[in-house]
Image (tube, rainbow, N blue to C red; front, side, top):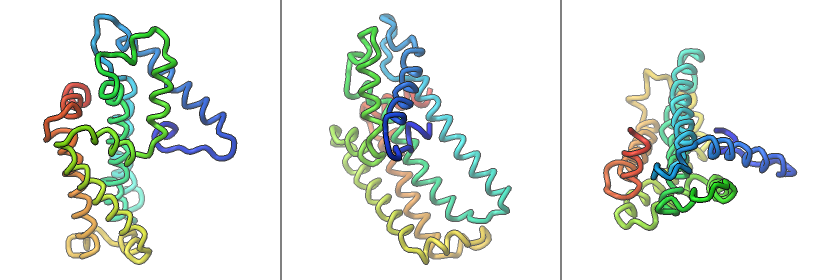
Amino acid sequence: MLLLLESLPVGNSSAWEAGRRNLLERYLTEDHGLRSARNQRSVPLFLLNDIARYWRTMVVDFAYKQRDRENEGYALRNIKLGLSRKLIYASGLLACFSCDLKFPEKTLFRSQQSHQAIDELNLTFKKTPLELIAELTAPYDALLAPTIRLLTAYDQFLGLLSDSSQRELLRNLPPSQIDSDPTFEAARSIRNNFGSAILDIFLRIESPIQKLMIERGVL
């Protein structure tokens, strides 16, 4: 998941490119339902399930570090989990949904050859999470407002972290003080606005993305 969702090549990119393509080939060729004539599914569920598992692993890791580090850095990690980490998960879901959103009626998987699907997903995963969300929500007018709220909240989050004094305050803030600290309260408000926009895009507002989330991402 790190290779697909968060990596960039250093120096010669050929090994990085080959590794990503081999990984996608495994996910797509071993998911036999994608090419079954009886199965109308066009979302790569093996890949989708591992992206969801990666998100749950990050949540568990947050709890582990909270205990292992005796709450050191708790406030900063809390905000990152609800913003940057959740953004990675959301963009990974949309990357999988893009196989249906951009190629209706299973056109991406009609061929028995996986090259086209690998090429498409490889290009999709090369986009940044914010680029991917903006691109795939753009066709749906109902999702314009929550997408703007999401991008605005994330911009505010980056602005907060770029302030070294605020970042260090959050890094060193004890859990016992988070409910009374104005910096954490501002960060929590940003996190909540971001999370609400994510819920609107994926679950609350009727759209093809909501339909796919319910049918493939939830159940």
